[in-house]
Amino acid sequence: MLKNKTVVLGITGGIAAYKAVDIASKLTQAGANVRVVMTKSALEFITPLTFESITGNTVVTDMFQPNAEHRINHVALSEVADVIVIAPATANIIAKLACGIADDMLTCTVLATRAPVIVSPSMHTNMYENSITQENIAKLKKRGFKMIEPQAGRLASGGYGVGRLPDTETIIGAIRQTLGKNGDLKGKKVVVTAGGTQEAIDPVRYLGNRSSGKMGYAVAEAARDRGAEVTLITAPTALVAPAGIELIKVQSAKEMKNAVAKASAKADALIMAAAVADYTPKAAAKQKIKKGAGGLTLDLVKTPDIISEVKGKFLKIGFAAETENLLANAKKKLTGKGMDMIVANDVSAEGSGFGTDTNKVTILLKNGRQESLPLMSKREVAEKILDKMGKMMEGKM
Ligand SMILES: Cc1cc2nc3c(=O)[nH]c(=O)nc-3n(C[C@H](O)[C@H](O)[C@H](O)COP(=O)(O)O)c2cc1C
Image (cartoon, rainbow, N blue to C red; front, side, top):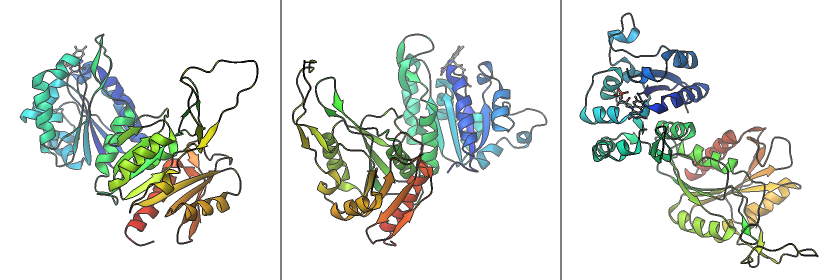
């Protein structure tokens, strides 16, 4: 996805300029050719040497720099860019872009490019909320710029408010989504579930499981990066909300079922990677249960079986997390629950299952075919699932 793509990273004179180091580093690690352009004000906050060391490329700071490759052509970077991202973007650069000003290398590059441009504003809340800034942002959106919403939190100037630069994952997620928008799943609506549901015992306790949500999030992000419109229905996890994905947060199996039923009404595929509780307390205690002299017995009832109960024309893809008789149990689920595909994974195997970044799975299809994959990253597993799902959608499998 990012491999061999040229990402022009524009850095402007905001206090969050130091965070661009992490963005440049992660993009480079992902295989992108990162070309950094810094405004004059950005140089007051951080030095080009840092970015040159990380990206292995010369940093452009001056349109009239003598003996520089770009001196010949002030639009050189605009032509090689697959995507331009400005992070952090000051109120000043946003205003200049909205007016078509081209008085430095960054503004010239943006004005001349045909590549998509992503802008991540970061500034004091009052500057951000000022109607002039808001009008400029609206103007850029209307012209097709992709704006990343700043986050609320503690500001460098003290106090709290909206204006913080989002974390690196969010910005890179937006870049991946932009680069993949014409991918093989373009126009497809995909609903993904993730995480382990929590079934309330009382106001402070719940029955849960060891699911980290990593597999489901990897599937959702991979589908987004192939152009799909993704809704991620997630039980509580410690993971960052992925950019460019509609996120619906739920807690219990019942809440997940309702959310899945609603979201999948117009979906092309439902991928159930969540670890949904099979049983839930018959009734959660209204007050915290006190420790008594004897033991405690919980009265449990079955939860809804989401994948078999939710009806529709979409493809149904499930996961079977097992600790024994993996394939036999997976086959039983595949046919018994009317699925089109099931991903069987032995959660007790090394490097596989809950909390890890890798997984070793066997994919079984309803036509009887199956493929056992070697240990690979959850993202790679996600891509394999989507390869098969894409073929099924085209009627080729
Ligand atoms: C310490 C300091 C921090 C600043 N932080 C920001 C900021 O976070 N966001 C912003 O829009 N402007 C900020 N500014 C103001 C910009 O640096 C100023 O508007 C500058 O002209 C921006 O130029 P540029 O857009 O060409 O980089 C800050 C200024 C100073 C002195």
